[in-house]
Image (tube, rainbow, N blue to C red; front, side):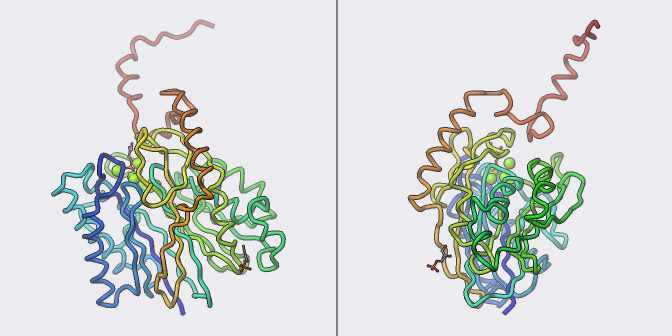
Amino acid sequence: MKVTLSVIKADIGGFVGHSDSHPQCLVRAEKHLAEAKKNGMLIDYHITKCGDDLQLVMTHQKGINNKVIHEMAWDTFVSCTEVAKELKLYGAGQDLLCDAFSGNVKGMGPGVAEMELEERPSEPIIIFMADKTSSGAWNLPLYKMFADPFNTIGLVIAENMHDGFSFEVHDVKESKGISFNTPEEIYDMLVFIGAHSRFAIKSVSTRKGEIAAVSSTQKLAFLADRYVGKDDPVCIVRAQGSFPAVGEILEPFAQPYLVEGWMRGSHNGPIMPVSIEDSTPTRFDGPPRVTALGFQLSNGMLIGPRDMFKDKSFDNARQKSLDMADMMRSHGPFEPHRLPLEEMEYTTMPQVSKKLAGRFKPLED
Ligand code: 13P
Ligand code: 13P
Ligand code: MG
Ligand code: MG
Ligand code: MG
Ligand code: MG
C-alpha cells in the first residue's frame, strides 16, 4: 500500500513570547484535521507542537506536494492564527507570510517534509522536530545515521545496509542540488554539508532508490523583507530493515552539537534533545530543542506516538547541552556565539555603518 506522510508546520503565535504553543491553538487544529479525516482526505493525523511551532503530522494517499493537502494545512494555520490573535499571542501568524494560498505552502512560510512510501510489513518511523534552529541542523545527525559506522553499526554488519546510501544536498542560497553516494563520496560530500548554513541535506535514499529520510529543507525565499524557509525544521526518518535501527537514528542526539538559531535566530548554540513537554525554549529563548516522535504505520494509520527523547538515556545529553549553553553564553555578543554578520536574522550593521561612515578613516600603509 502506497502512503504519503506529510509533516507541515508553522509558527502561528507563541505563548509566552517564543517559548511555547497555546493549547487552544492545538485544539483548533484538531477540529480541522478531524474534519479532513472524516471526509476521507486524510487517513490519519497527529497534532503536536515543538516550542512555538504547530506541527501537523498527516497520512493520505494523494502524494507529495498535493494542492488539496497543502491548502487544507494552510487554512488550518490561518484558522489557528485567529485563535492566536484573540489571545494576543506573540507573533500571531508569524510564519504565514502570504495573504492567500497559491497552490503549495512551500515558500509561503510554513515548513514541509513529505515522503511517499510503500508501507512495509512493519513501518517504524521517527519524526524529528526542532525549534530555534535551521534546516542545516539535520546535516550532522543525518550524516551520522546513514554514513558513519561509529554511529550506525548496521552499515558494517547488516547486509541490507552495507551498500550505503545516497544523499541529496541542496545549496539553499544558489537554489541548486547535487546527489552524493556514500561511502565512496563522503569526503566530497563533507566539504559541502559541513557548511550547514548554505548546504542542507534534503533527503536520503537507499542505493536502490527507496526513500529513507526527508527534511523540510527548501530554497530560501526572500519574503516580507527577510529570508524564509530554513527556520525551525522537521525531518522524517524510516527505521529498521534496510534503514538504520531506531536506536541508530536517535544516537546522534546523544552527543549535543552546535546549531544556528537560538536568540533572535542569530546565535550558535547546542541542540538539546527533549520530550514534547519540555520543548519550551526559555533560557535566552533556547537553547535550541529537538524532539522525536516515533510511530508505527499500519495501513496509513499513525500508531503512536512514542515520545522518544523522554527516555532517561538522553539525560546526560541534556546536561551536556546545558553546560555547552553556559559556555557559549559567556561570549555574549561575540562570535562564535553570535553568528557571523551574513547569517544573522537580525542586524543593525547597515544602520550603524551608515551613521559612522564619515568617521572611518583610511589606514596608513
Ligand atoms: P531485535 O532482535 O529485538 O529485533 O533487535 C534488532 C535490532 O535491530 C536492535 O537494534
Ligand atoms: P522562532 O523562529 O521560534 O519564532 O524564534 C524567533 C526568535 O527570534 C527567538 O528569539
Ligand atoms: Mg515564534
Ligand atoms: Mg519556533
Ligand atoms: Mg520560527
Ligand atoms: Mg527564527
